[in-house]
Structure formats: structure tokens, C-alpha cells
Length: 136
Image 1 (cartoon, rainbow, N blue to C red):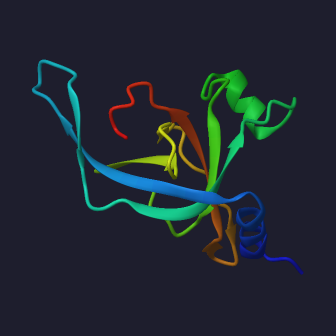
Image 2 (spheres, rainbow, N blue to C red):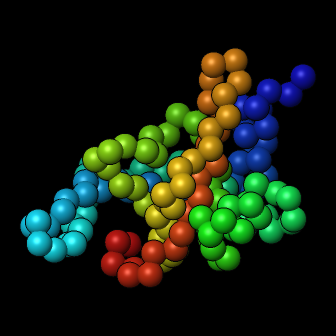
């Protein structure tokens, strides 16, 4: 029997690459403007994960999200270990391939973390490329 964490280990062994995670604390400007500031929080760390293209095959989960407008063409999926912190009220995170200048931010639809026997072996997170490039 193949367990989910064995499948994740196999996927990251075959297609995985080092991915840099960086956390930021989000601040908001005064009550009269929409200014959003991000301050780096802690050190960068590297994990193994896989970036995958969005699956546009009719009937797939990705195509449904695409039709709903929740994701766009050009977005990507990131598959990582289920134990990595990706959602928090105070922290924002970015991910990038090690050595690459392209930085991705989580799309607000949230991640998908299937549970098997009470454990989250992996997470699928929808990501969008940051256009600013100032967070590298």
C-alpha cells in the first residue's frame, strides 16, 4: 500500500527542487489610505517542493477554479510538505525557486491539504507571480 507521504516523497524526488520560503509581517497604513507594507520576519528557509502548471482539462479542480475566476491562466500550484506554515493572520509568505528571480505569493483561495489518518502529508497551494519583483 502506498501512503500519501510516500507519494509526496516520490514526487519531490523526481520533480522536486529547492524552494525558498520567506515570511513577512503585514502592516496597514492609516485609516484614510490602502497602503500595505510588508516587513521581513525571520530568516529564509529552503524546502523541497514542486511547482506545477494549472491543469485546464475540462472537469478538473483547476479548470473549475479557472471558470469561477478564482485563479488565472499563468498561475501555478506548489506542492509541499503538510507541516510547513502557509496560512496565518499576521504573516504573508512568498516562495521562489532557489536561485530564480521569479517570486510567487499565495492566492487568497487558500490551500488544499488532504488529511489521511489525521495527518496532512502534503499541501497544494495556488500561487501567482508577483509583478513588483521588489521582494526578491
